[in-house]
Each structure stands twice: as structure tokens, then as C-alpha cells.
Image (tube, rainbow, N blue to C red; front, side, top):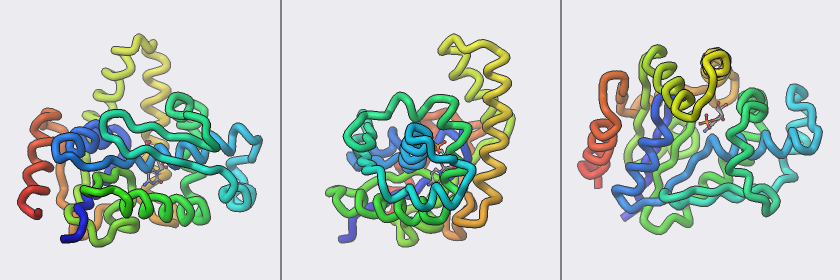
Length: 225
Ligand code: C5P
């Protein structure tokens, strides 16, 4: 039978990453964080002084970095030209610029190809999370999930995470504004915007616990395999 592909899309703060990793671990599947690939590309552009607001410059440069994404649900890593960038890609510089880089069609074409390659070599199957997994990258996925949560629930979760790390309230407010801006950019861009695939199952996580969301998705996969 064809390998299992679970495609999980949704906006930032929907709980996508945590849920996707947990589902992969529970089912013994590989895991692919495609946002990390767009972040790694952005990190390389910033490190090499490419003007990320200049789409032509980004399009020309995007073939250069060698991006390798690990697919272990227990601890995914990502390297650019052999350097582990798992830490730096979560920083505020990359986070504020990634949507501009991800809007460039040549960047998407290159990373989509890499993403499909990761799925092909995943022996037991893969859980892939991002913005266009169900709509573009894996149109024939075993299961497509569109994960959402109310704006308030997403902002509150993100704030709680940051507070737990000791981040001050002013920074938390700034990051909430940045998250809103990024979601608007991701949903309105011309190439492969964030949208729910017609055949995706909508899961609203606003009033569910993490365990409930994971159980729901694991159950849906089991129904189909
Ligand atoms: O999921 P994460 O917040 O790490 O994604 C970072 C950014 O990468 C998103 O805001 C979006 O601009 C871009 N992205 C994308 N397509 C994907 C995954 C992420 O455009 N499949």
C-alpha cells in the first residue's frame, strides 16, 4: 500500500508543531516541519546579505544554500550548508522576514521539491506540517487536517509559552502583533496562500486540550489506514 502521508496546515499558534510531532511519535511516522525550511532559507539570505525585500534577488540566490531537514519526530534538526541552524531560525530577525521570503515563487518551487523528497524516503510514512501541505505539496495525502484556533486562543497560547520562558510583557505584545501580520501575509500572498483544502478535516483547537487534539487526529489516521 502507498506510504501514509498526514498533511497538517494552519496558521501560527494553532498548535500545529506540537500536535504534528506528537501524532508522528504516536504512529511511528517521520515528521517534517516545512516552516523550518522557509526559516532556514531566510536565515541564509540574512547571513549572506541578500535584501529579502527584493524578490528578484531572493529568486536568484535561493538555489545556493544546501538545506537538509531531519525527519525524526523526537528531535528534528535542520542544517544549512552543514551548519545546524535549529536555534537561530527561531530568532526574531528570521521570524519577522520569513513571510517575505516564503512569498517568492522560486523559493517555494525549490522547497516543495525538497519536501516531496523527504516524504519519498520516509519508510513508514510522514506527518508534514506547514501552510500548503494539503493544497499543494501532498494533494493525495492519506489525511489532510486544517488546524485552527480563535485569534484569542492563539495569542494566549503564544503569550503563555513566552511568559514561561521569562520574556517580558512588552516583547510578548510585539510578538503578538508580528504574528497577526505574518498570518495576514501568509493568507493573502499570491503563490500558495494558506487556505483549507476542500477535502481537509477542520479541527478547531480553541476549546480542546493538546491530548484531545492528538487523539482526534490519530483516530482519523487509523480510520483511513
Ligand atoms: O510554521 P512556521 O511559523 O515556522 O513558518 C514560518 C513561515 O514560513 C510562515 O509564516 C510562512 O510564511 C512560511 N511557510 C510557508 N509554507 C509552509 C510553511 C511555512 O509559506 N508550508
